[in-house]
Amino acid sequence: QVQLVQSGAEVKKPGASVKVSCKASGYTFTGYYMHWVRQAPGQGLEWMGWINPNSGGTNYAQKFQGRVTMTRDTSISTAYMELSRLRSDDTAVYYCARDRSIVGANNGMDVWGQGTTVTVSS
Amino acid sequence: DIQMTQSPSSLSASVGDRVTITCRASQSISSYLNWYQQKPGKAPKLLIYAASSLQSGVPSRFSGSGSGTDFTLTISSLQPEDFATYYCQQSYSTPHSFGQGTKLEIK
Image (tube, rainbow over all chains, first blue to last red; front, side, top):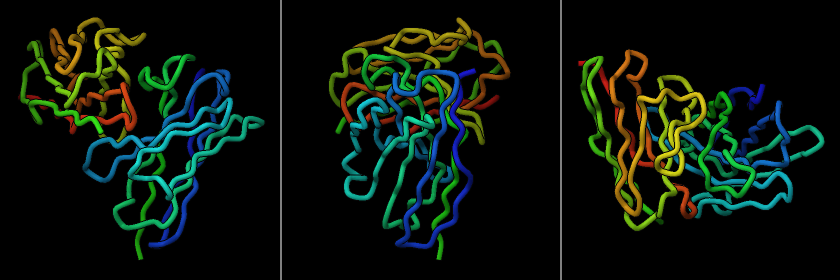
């Protein structure tokens, strides 16, 4: 079945970096854009950006420009999201989510990972 | 950036009720509007895409409508499993912003 499995919870100190992985299975990894979304405790959803797993092209929300890097390894069908210079307000659950359509990155997100909790604390 | 505003922020209703949630965009987004359901501790689930298209496997009591700046999600007859938080999201332009959410609670 189609699924996304994310890496485990992380605890980081302010100023550090975190890299979250998202392993895809059950579909052609390079055929669908991958989005990253985060959710701070008790808060709403925040879109961070997408990566085209075929080309490696990315589109980041301006808010995260310069701090976020999305990459992929097509040989193992895995996408990555790295966030640097972590602050306490980066504490959140981070989700990867597949775009619904093989055409473009603006069709809604139909398959989600289970989420990775990142805690930033000194 | 496009701002998405949902109303109400919270809603109390009973099983069997018809419920409508509204989402307004700060500028026209054509039909690039998606709705998600999220239960506590779980990832969001896509319900409606392109404003009115029902995602595969989603019960037909869910429906969406609208275009331009004003959109609605309707649940025709609430079931116990529908009590959750609902989010709209625009995918017209990046960043693909979400509304603040509507928490649907049992009356």
